[in-house]
Amino acid sequence: MIKITTENNFFKPDTFDEFKDYIYKELLSRPSISLDKGGEVNTEVSLVQDNIGRVVMHLNIHKIPEDVYSRTFWYANKIDKNMIPNTFMFARYSKKYGIPKLFPHIDNSNTDFTIDCQIESTIQWPIVIENNRYILNNNDAIVFESSKYAHWREPILFKDEDYVDMAFFHFIHKDKPNNFKKKASIKGDYIFNYYKKEKELT
Image 1: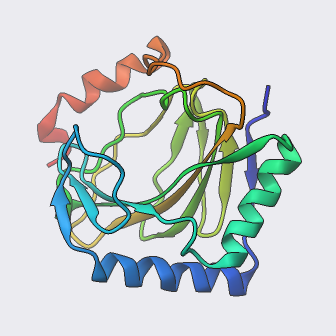
Image 2: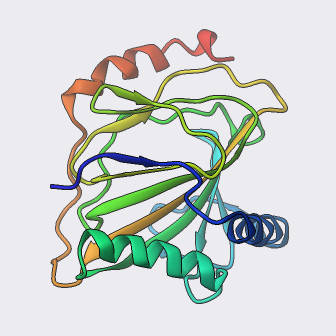
Image 3: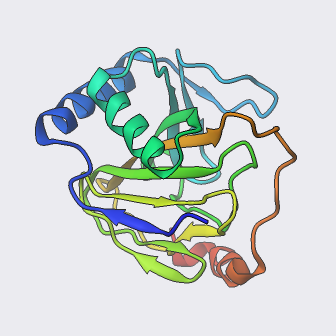
């Protein structure tokens, strides 16, 4: 079992700045398309998910700054030397893409643990993991078993100019088979009822 851990200043300042520059150049240069549920991972486009108010990019691990890959891979191997990268992603939550929300969910089972790193944000938007609330600042990360623990974001009203930028580094044990997606924990079900109140979020 991996203990839920928060890490302040996860990347060195120079590495973090280089990573931000890389991400924002990618965000500006990639064409945006609507999410195709049947599509495959594509590291050449950004995917708009208007049902949860975000745009996501799958990051090519061979093109991200080397120090970013080295830091995350080193951290993963400190947890378990058999961990290998699964999917690296970036997400921006903003009213530009819909009403930002993150429902209670458990990541699919081809992820053993995740490093969530906040890149930049205009607001505080707590992440909740099994009913425990965490607030991240820029360059802070939280490490947890995202395929085991239900997690979500507290409902919050975004202003037009607000955004939250996150990077997700998913790792998996090299010998683990890819199983079916798990359902979210019932502990977070009350959030669904809140999100049904559209007038509270518009």
